[in-house]
Amino acid sequence: MHAGSIGAVTSADGTVLAFDRLGDGPPVIMAAGAFNDRGTTAPLSRALAQRCRVLNYDRRGRGGSGDTAPYAVQREIEDLAALIGHAGRDVAVFGYSSGANLALRAAAAGLPIGRLVLYEPPYNAHDDDPRLPADLSARLAELVAAGRRGDAVELYQTVAVGIPEPVVAQLREAPFRPALEAIAHTLAYDAAILGDRSLPSAMLAAVRIPTLVICGDRSVPFLRSAAHAVAATLPDARLTTLADQSHDIDPTTTAAAMTAFLTGAR
Image (cartoon, rainbow, N blue to C red; front, side, top):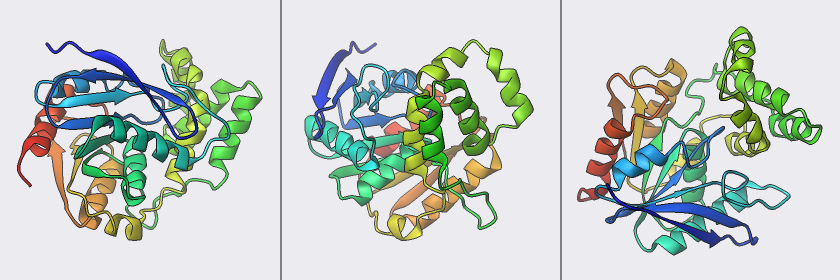
C-alpha cells in the first residue's frame, strides 16, 4: 500500500482543482471521462502507485474541484497545464474515454507531455459511424439550466454513449442514477470536447508523443475500432488489447500494461 495525500492547483482562470497524490516514480496525471470523477480512476491510481507518482484529479465541475463559467475546452487544457506544472518534467497523461480526447487536445496544443496513455477514446473510425449533433453540448447545458438533470443524463446516454432507449429507461431506477444526475452539468463539457466525434486525423498526425492506446477485447466494436484508428494515425503509438476486458477499467490488468510503457526506455 502507498499512502497518498490530497493536493490542489489553481488553473489560469482561478479554478481550484483537487487531486490525490500517490506513490513515487515517473509522474502520471489521470483524466477521467464523462459521468466520472476521480473516484473512477482511484483503483487504477492505487495500482499504478506501486511504480509511478500519480496525480489523480477531479476535472473542473466534479468532485472536489471548482468550476468557472463560461465553459471552454481551452480551460480544461489550461487545467492540465497547471497540473503538469505542479508535477514536474516528463509527465505522462492518462485519459479515459472522453478524457483521452481531452488529453490528445492538450498534447496537440503543445503542453509539455512526455507520454500519453489513452483508454478507448471515442472517435468515429468509419465514415458511416453516426456523428454527434452539433448542438449536443448546448442542449445538455439547457436541460441542466432548466433543472432537468435526469433528461440530460438520458440524452447523453442515448446520443453519445449509444445505449438503447429501453435500457436507458431501466437505468432510471439504478442505485447510481443520483450520482449521474449530480454530475450532469459536466456532460456538456464532454460533448464539447468530443465535437461531432470525427477522427481528427490532421491533429493526431501532429502529436508525436510516445503513446499507448488501450482497448478491451470485450468492448463494443465502435470503441475497439476507434482505438485501432487512433493508434494507426498517431506517429508514435502502440496498441494494446487487454484480454477479457471492456470499457470498464480493470486496475490490475491496465496498470500492468501502463507501468511497462511508462517505466520502459524510449
